Amino acid sequence: MTLALVVGCSEHVWDEVEAAQRLADYHAYYVCKMAGIHWDEGHFVWCSLHPEYMPHYQEKRRELELPDCYEIVVPLINEVGAHWQHCKIADRCVSYRWPGMSASGSSGLFAAKIALDDGHDRVVLAGVPMLRASKHFARGQDWLQRDSFMDGWKQAMPHIRGKVRSLSGWTMQTLGVPTPEWLAEAARGDSAIGRDALIGE
Image (cartoon, rainbow, N blue to C red):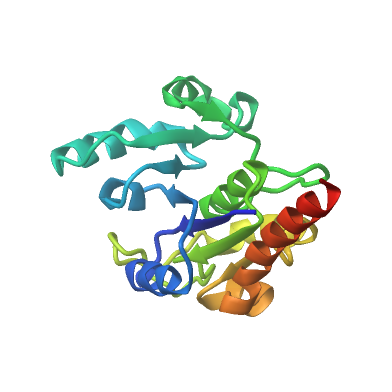
């Protein structure tokens, strides 16, 4: 079983990344939008609900002379409206909705869905508080669009509760804070599988 870290764009994202890394070693990183411009810790999955912004973000990353060690993932062509032509820059297209969902969550929720779809058993959210007053780490502005994404988060709860936890904000209050014990459940599951395999032999 494996652990994934989602890296959002709130003002305290880098402090939360450090806190998350003190809790565990992660098998994969799913980095949202502008945070991917600055990510410099090896290969990552670069996630965004807005494929139209990705060429600009890539250029900004190149200006920082950071390596092209990422996979770009955006929504399905029929989920991005007039921006469908920008999906061609992606390495993968993944639906932002689970079956039965009628609303979109934020890019943070999209990144968590990709991580779960990729088979990770525990997902930690860093810098994804889903608070209107939580400023953007680069723009320094309140997130005025926050409320428009809340229906998507609420509809996703049956799919993420117990598998996803957060280090701050509404998502932490709703999903819980990641603890060493919660993260260790994945490792214990791995050990149990190993023991069962040995017994079976």
